[in-house]
Length: 65
Image (tube, one colour):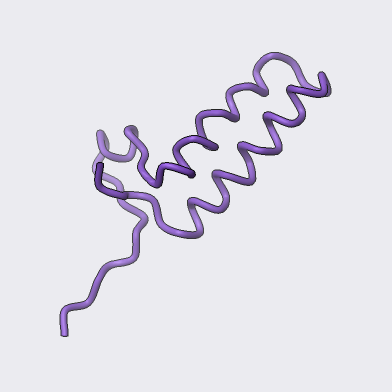
């Protein structure tokens, strides 16, 4: 699959995902904390199916020289 998530977006997704999963694993938040797996996995994979459906792309544009 083609990457459609830029570097800042990826880092934010991974950090938010790790925090939510850690909070859920330590019972500091409810079951909904496991939703953090979604941004974690999409950030690690570098592609987001929802972005693809709506036509978003946060990757930097490559300049032709």
